[in-house]
Amino acid sequence: MATENEISSEIIDVQGGRITFAPDVIATIANLAAAEIDGVDGMSGNVAENISGMLNSKKNLTKGVRVEVSEDVVSVELAVIVKYGYKIHEVCHNIQRSIKNAIETMTGLRVLQVNVSVQSISFEKGSQKKAESPAEPQ
Image 1 (tube, rainbow, N blue to C red):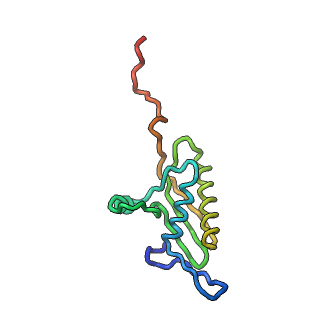
Image 2: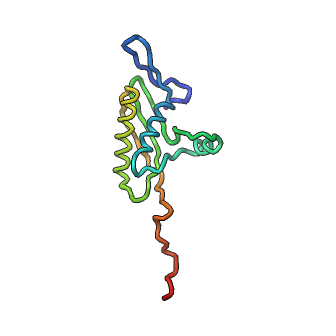
Image 3: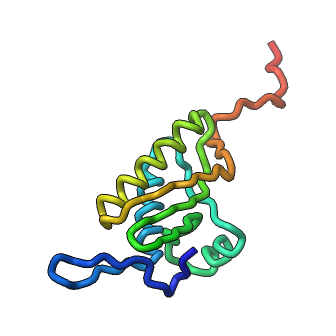
């Protein structure tokens, strides 16, 4: 996996110049593309990312996303939280398609794979019935 300070990719321009992408740029594109999918509640990071997010006041757009770049090929791994009631396999397939399209369109890099790991299911506050509440007296 690429580290934060590494230059991830190099593309030779027709003018003879170079275009380089930092890993955070590609991770941010992936995060934003995944967040637009219906059924995604958010990204799930590891313990270090969660602590870093609490200490850092700005929103971390690379949370839960790891990017590996070799030459002009990108592999993405991300951890997501899916909303209850959605078909998980459809949500994940839509995430994969959206991320692949966004990265290839915005960077010109070829996406080799997008691996989605579902870390948890989120429940909206009003979606659970109160099974424990006693019956109303009549």
